[in-house]
Image (cartoon, rainbow, N blue to C red; front, side, top):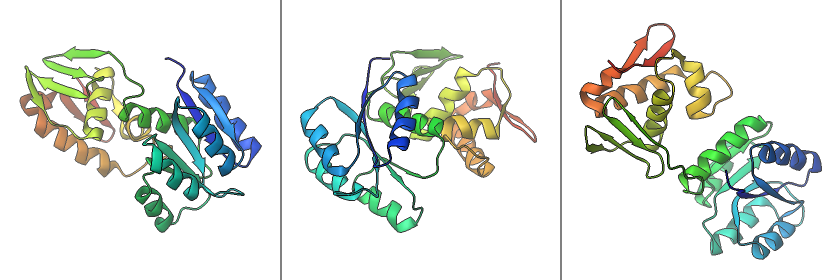
Length: 225
């Protein structure tokens, strides 16, 4: 992966180091700011920042103010970090154009996975990989799927789910594993979320929906007949 530049903004040095270490391990280049004012200085100085990971509670200029100012000039993806988990805070974040909202404490691995997902959605992390399995062609760069030459419309999560199934052909996948890899949950979430998405995905795939086999009491397996 090319060195994608991420700006990490948090007044806690320990937190910045933790996030930086995990991001650098995955090949990202990291800039750090200890408060909102320094974050804006770096933002104006460096036009190559591809993602901002931004704490809410900071001295001098808080995360909400930073996000408002950034959005006046740029659509750069923003992941907001906060110790709060109140719904109104989350709604405020999305109204300001926040792309992801993660409550502390969080798993650094999950944060990196969310960062990569946000960058894929914004076409920063593109891949030229095209999968062709049993008449199903998945173009990750274009975020398109065709079945027997005919395009099908999938939601973002349906696309991610189908891609994950295809990448793990013939492997029995538990619902927990699917949640961890597609929804990026670090806990066992509601299995109905997966079941609902699989049902919709199968319907859109027509006859090839039968490639997604149900393993009763466990999860699913993608297997081409």
